[in-house]
Image 1 (cartoon, one colour):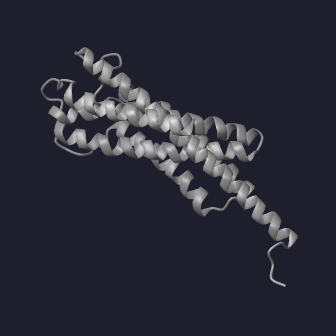
Image 2 (tube, rainbow, N blue to C red):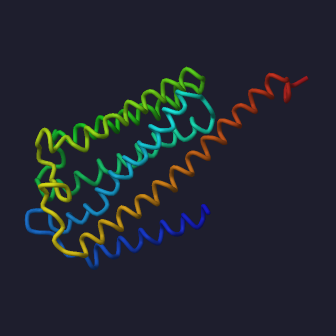
Length: 230
């Protein structure tokens, strides 16, 4: 199943890249020219961040309710993948913004709240790496993951509520996608990022679970005196 999912993800991304840059027409003037095609990866990456954050939120909440290694592994994987996709959004967005607005970054409400969210998830990852793997550290990381996910609706609705330079394209009041190929490209982009998110979440959760089991086995062996020099 892993290799089938890996192959499907690679094929869908290869098709999406070719379709976007060879088939999909450029958007209207003032949207950044060919740089606007970043949109078909930028928006799905944001969706994948929401999806990863949602997985991390659910696993963290379940862990706080009843601690298990499996729930902790998925909670950790959710935060890690949220950082990965959030970094992709924060990288691709400024590249498009430079062509459309003339600047890489403005402290727009959506940009600022997104940056804050990614920093919270990054803090969770750093805590996991350097804070230890005890029960208290795991619970604190789970609570922080829940906090990071709570900010996601603020990111989503920030432009509608507070205004800002960030463009509104596919939601109410947006410019819309005028050509059918644009809509198809965006749909394929969502599908591709969903596959990638599922693949990365699965890989990281399995690795995290194996790592925790190995650490537990090493602690048990040390407590039993196995491997000590005599």
